[in-house]
Image 1 (cartoon, helix red, strand yellow):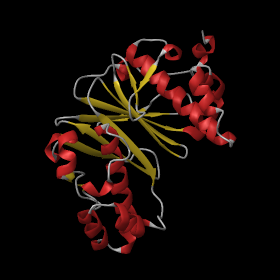
Image 2 (cartoon, rainbow, N blue to C red):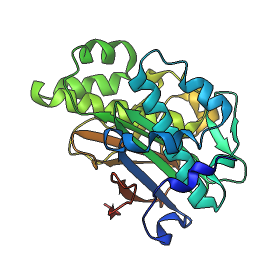
Image 3 (tube, rainbow, N blue to C red):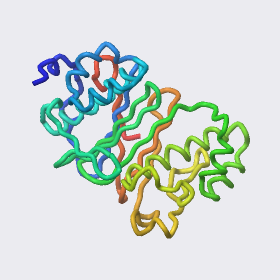
Length: 260
C-alpha cells in the first residue's frame, strides 16, 4: 500500500470531482510549479509506471512523467472515490489507457504544460501545445495535412500561419485520440478548421475513415487557452457537450474554473 498518497494536497471543492453527463472537465497544470510533490506523486504509481519513468535518460523527463501520471491517478481517484494508487489501467490495441467502469479520460502535455480531460463516459481526446514559431510548418503541412487545410494555411498572412498550424495540429491530435483508432490514422484523410478566430470544427472525413469514425456531424471540437502561452483542443464524439476547465496551482487546488 502506498501510504504516502495521503500527503498529496488536493484542494478544490467536492463538486469539482462530480462528472455530470454531457460535461467534459479539463484540468490544466504547470508541472514546473509542482516539482515539490514529485515524491508523493511517485508513491501513487504502479510498478510498470515506475519502470517506464526510470527508462528516461534525462531526470527532467522522468520527473514530468511521474508528475503527469500522478496527477492523472489523483484526479481519477477523486472522481471515482477510489484509492489513486490502486487504480489499474487497461491498455487497448492502440495503447490508450482506460479505466474499467469509467470515467473516460485523456491526457496531453507539452513540456511542462499538462491537460487532462475527464468525462463520465464517451469518446474524448485532448491535445495541448505551446504557442511558438514552427520552423518547418509549411513542409509538415504540405506532407501530412489535408489539401483543404494546406490551402487555408497558405491563405493566412505569415504572422498568423504558426498559430493556424498549431490550431490544426491540436485539433487533429485531439480528434485522433478521441476516435481511438490509433495515431497511425492518416492526417491527410480528414480536415479541421485552421483559421484563427473561426469556430473550431471538423470539416471533412474521408470515405476510407467513415466506417470507423463516422462523419463530421458526429463530432464536436473545442479550443481552450488556459495556461499562458498554450493552446489546447478537445474532441468528443457526439454533440451537446459542455467543456469546463480547472487550473491546479502549486498546492494542487483548482482555483481557476469556467465553462468558457
